[in-house]
Amino acid sequence: MKLYTYQTSDKTERIGIGFSAKPGYLWPAEIFGLSFSDMNELISSLTLPELLSTVSPVNASDGEAISIDSIRLMAPIPHPSQDILCLGINYAAHAEESARFHRDAFIVNQEKAVYFSKRVHTASGCGDPIPLHENLTDSVDYEAELAVVLGKDAKNVSASDAPDYIFGYTVINDVSARNLQTEHKQWYFGKSLDGFTPMGPCIVTADEISFPPVLDICSRINGELRQNSSTGLLIHSIDAIIEELSAGMTLKTGTIIATGTPAGAGMGFTPPRFLKKGDIVECEVENIGILRNVVE
Image 1: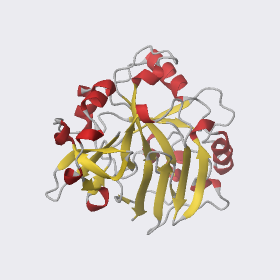
Image 2 (image 1 turned 90 degrees about the horizontal axis):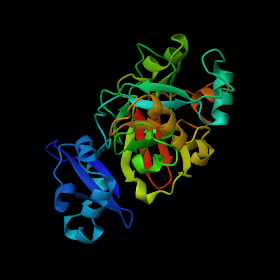
Image 3 (image 1 turned 30 degrees about the vertical axis):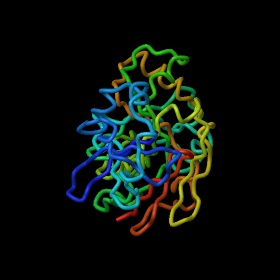
Image 4 (image 1 turned 45 degrees about the vertical axis):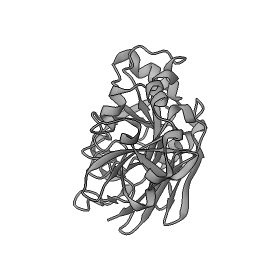
């Protein structure tokens, strides 16, 4: 099942439900008897098994289908209820390119996971612009990432039980201002500028993706392939991440965890290839979809 947040012609935000067997279309959640103000409320009100038992493609008539191309897709969770938890340096090849760019700011040969958080005022949807914030930075970069959405509170969760806490997966572009990231010696500010969290196009529920996810992940700039890897190459696995973090703090329902980006970010090139006005940025994860944004 695919869960969308979309905007109607009168600017109303609504939840849509799609199915892998019926690509290119979604159905208003109300058709299935679901009435929630936003995706946060849906996730906090229904467990994944409850959702799967309520919604069936059998009840999705063609006459009520909405073409995805005809609507504005928002981020599936436009207003995350808390900061996004992020993994840094979680692919070996990205660790190497990060060290080449700025060895003091990026840790290499780090045994423990590198965690940071990303403040999100409003997550951007497909088609929304990525601002350059030229008054603050001259080095805006892209990072395609697989993100995990938790479906229930997680506290002291073992790695073996971690899959039971996952509601679904989405794509995040962890846009980064590299000069702020390196000058401040920490990453919060450089990762959290408005417009720096494109997300989408949807949440794919966890039942549709085998655990652990081994999915192709890539990014393209103006059609040029930049990042091209697999989530099977994560240094710190999703189950290990959930086990470690939940041992020390409660991960609330709806928590979003961005699992890190592979090699091929702009800072990894010599000279660096940062984003510029007019660039079309596409981040894609297999079985989830393409997140496309234009730099302004």
